[in-house]
Image (cartoon, rainbow, N blue to C red; front, side):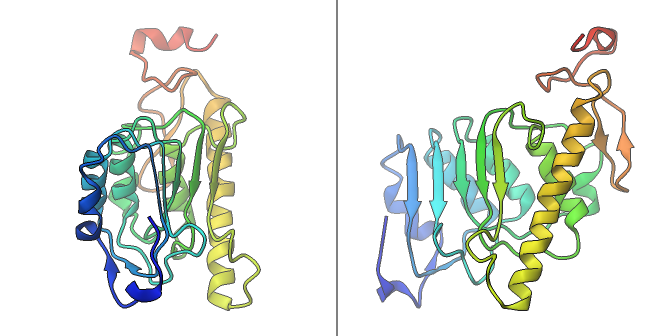
Length: 227
């Protein structure tokens, strides 16, 4: 789906995309637009319901969204849960959207992706919350940085040479996120007897052990995990 600058003054939301819903077997969607992207969490969920077989999704992949994103990280997670075949996504998110409750131990460990995956977060905004964002994304992509599967996660790669201070700062913050994710995941998978999750204070929470495939073990199974 591609349009010229005629749509520049308009927005891209679910009403813009609804005419594609009859094509419910779509595998790949790549949207090139000059509209302001205004898709919300709930609208991404509608996209997931409309196209459950998606393998890849890109929205303005070559340029970024410029005006910010209304998609939260919890919304991104719920979107992923609807698409078991998705292996590539290029969209922007609101990187400031992780709350202390989102990284509490009762929220983590509920859904993770163990297949090869490419996640490009384009020009997603982020604050000084790199640690919280890394915790949240490491829980979704627990193999990033472990060498077990190729999970490529990046942001601001198209603009990393920008001289604008806010662009440079955002690029550095996202690089920090990806680096911390790798540390978290390597630590977790080097302790297979008791895989680690993280509580709201950023400390390890050992409530729950996982095997090499990332499956939650019953207490009486933990001794034999990954031996």
